[in-house]
Image 1 (cartoon, rainbow, N blue to C red):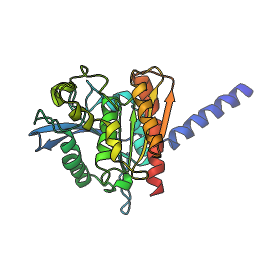
Image 2: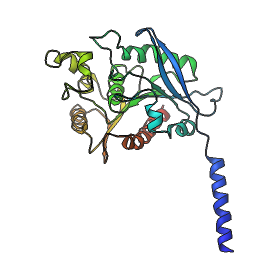
Image 3: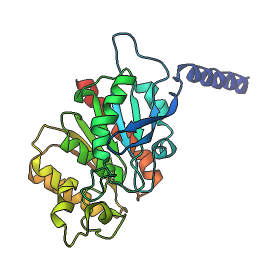
Image 4: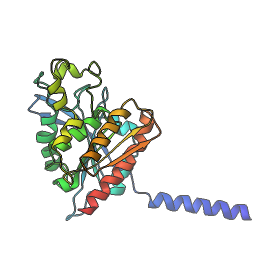
Amino acid sequence: MKSLILLLCTIALTHNLAIASPAAGPVDTILVHSNAMNKDIKCVIIRPSQKPATAEHWPVIYLLHGHSGNYAQWIQTAPQLAQEATTDGILFVCPDGGHDSWWFDSPVDPKVRYETFLTTELIPYIDAHYPTRADNAHRAITGLSMGGHGALYLAIRHRALFGAAGATSGGVDFTPFPNNWGIKKDLGDYATHKDVWENNTVIHAVDDLKNGELHFIFDCGTSDFFLPVNRNLHQKLLDKKIDHDYIERPGGHNHDYWNNSIDYQVLYFMKYFNSN
């Protein structure tokens, strides 16, 4: 009898959880045209399962992929984002940034203009086609690896667009890696273009940042090759007395780490959105 009662209770609990758990949001792939680069760019859109009420709109989190990744990397790495979109009422936008763009406008190759695309073409498109809260108090950006660099770099340079930003395993200073990841084809050789390289890194972009202008969080695994540059950025922000959240946790430069990390960053952004 006790076993039967336990079984019935378990079935009832499972049934109630299934009813209470909101449906995962739809995942769409769209094309957004870039006049700056004269091409269509794919983006994954992860949206809540239900449209917002008439008087409500969704905050937006832009998710940037890493080197050799693409627009689908985030939903493949962290499929729970589809559930979080509905649970938290968030629109996630995952644009394609090319194989190795590093999310800036190249001074060498006029066909590489991902900063212009994201800040002047993609954001207006998203705000025009989805019920978003179109202000920096409800818009955040983060990314992994190359995308972590891009997220902080773009947010610092465009603080009127983004109120919060993040990076996980971010390449926040790529100057120690002058021959890696195709960067020199877009910035020139490091030895002869040192100023160009530095002007396009996060660790130098923060020179222009004042405390309170941007809410941001970044983290890195203790086995990650980007750990030293993340520690350097953390120390520089401490020296400048700029508030930020910095986390180190066990892990390497891999999907398992990013799958775990992004949930904490979404919580951080939700706290920011709700404060506004």
